[in-house]
Amino acid sequence: MFVVALIAYFAVAVTVAAMLLLPPIRASILNAVADLHGRVSRRASNSASRARGHLTKSVKTSQSILVDTQKLLFRRRLLIFITAGILATPPLIAIALRGRQLLFQYDDTTRVPDEKIAALLNGEQLVPPPQLPPEVFATQEVEQVRPALQDASRDWNLLDADFRTRLLLVYKIMREQYGYQMALLEGYRSPERQNRLSQLGGVTNAAAFQSYHQYGLATDNAFLRDGKLVISEKDPWAMRGYQLYGQTAEQCGLVWGGRWKLMDLGHVEYHKPGFVMGKSPVPPQLQNIESRASLRQ
Image (cartoon, rainbow, N blue to C red; front, top):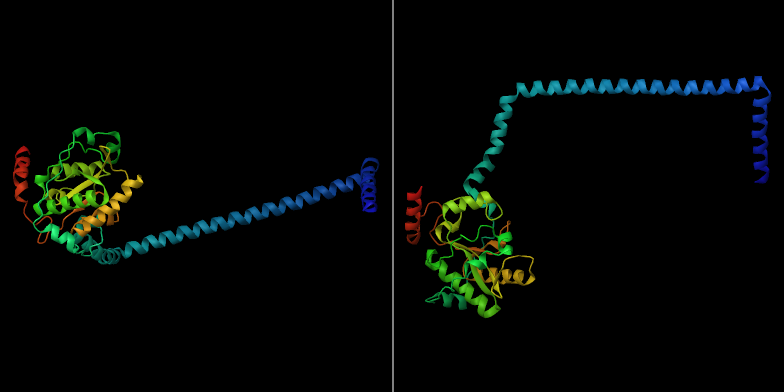
């Protein structure tokens, strides 16, 4: 290793000395370096020219293809429109038939109430819980989760009688078997309020008469703990309550919003036999309300 280093040092020293002391050798070396630099520069210039040529050719080819495609699409525009219409018709028909139900998909499997609950439903006279003070619905936590709740209707008399009985039975089971005190957040919802909430966002996507709330067949519910409403799904105690509440509601023949793709854990509704949303008449207990709303308009 030492010998190699010594030879390299000697070669460098001789070269430097020759360049400093012998002008002809210095000129030869400089000419060789300049020649090498020139060849490298010419090759780089030629490569750049070829690259520019290829790029220009590619651009011209792409422009030509684009022009040809535009001409083809223009010539075949009628055929394209007809084909697109044929392909789009089936899904559009399906969407029109299902309406806003696309926003509220759920497991539609019929759940038969067990014998004990069926016996309770037959002739069971249940009384709605006492009305809660308005300030319970005006806390910051409630406002963050459910805005515009203070002016919601919590009148049990505006609910369908059969639905009211089933929901009160859910309240009773949740209280006696699981220790959860339920609270009604909203029951009947006017068409005007339904439209307002759908525009507000975060509460519902259904417009007026696209929700069971307008027919007294749906409610939103939550839990009471130490006199305060607990709505947040981040609370483990409340989350366990929602699961028990959903199971109990289904056992009582109700549809639970927790099975929807866009989950609404506090929502339940009653698909009353023979009732068709948008076609069935307004329930008797709501006719006076709808009449007064029409007069205000």
